[in-house]
Image (cartoon, helix red, strand yellow):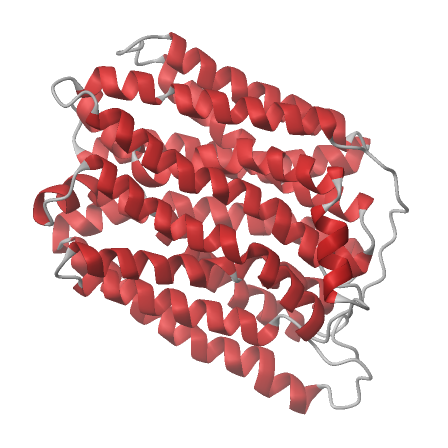
Length: 421
């Protein structure tokens, strides 16, 4: 029995998925304690936005190197390394005593997070049949949504009951345990169970030249177009939800943290629906670029309507807009569907990393720029948030442009199971 036929592959998948779920929850968890950190560590909104940006900067800068490493050396140990680094950063967040410690902690969280997605996709591509791959991508999207969902009301209730420090320390301990589980599941047991396999789990498709792979990627219009797409969909959502989403509702509508978290949760539900639904529609009808362009247009118009609604928009409209914005973020998985359609297998890892980098470049920029805008209106936070919403409007316009520039090249549907993403 091969790996692609063994029931053990589900142990691999769900163990890796559990780590991914918790790590995603740490992207947006700081948004719950924005006000606490500002008062406890005496930092301004601009400095706090910069701290959030440091986390996503580490993620963005490492995407291309991680893609190259996944292509050349396999994903197993990098997945374990990322989980361990994220656990260390999360623990350091929980025990931080000074603002500079928080900066270091969030940087480590970003480094760990940077290794997860590309290597998770590479692992399932090696363990599962080609016809199972697209469905599993949808499940990964749901797990990401659940991770972000956990960082709303559940984490807010935890913070209310036991304080924000206990949250980060507790999650870090679980992640340390998952590091050990991943080592056993991905490295130790497969060596004993599948000794007869010609191709071992985690063995990559090796490109002939790293320099050539980088050159072809950085000179490809298609790669830049897909990075622009991710810039518009992912960074605006992650950057806002992870830094200023809860604070927006607390300061503009004077809501309690738990109530504000519940409203933000609607956007996360939209993301959970958007991933599987757009993947199913793309598989069913095959119009990937047309669907992708529609998703970008809906997201851009949602941010534009929110901004145009003024300082205190009609409250019934905002949850609808949040759900649509979340739906657009879920639809960002189509970026990687287009990567698979339009690039050879030996470059899929590095191009996926390059495109993913675009999303987190905007996640780096948005919190800092938003914080700078808020600092210009210290006496009227509602006015500051209003002008801050212009930032995601401009960012999503970049995404729409990328969707229009991207090619939609049809490739054969069948994908060899040994290919690596």
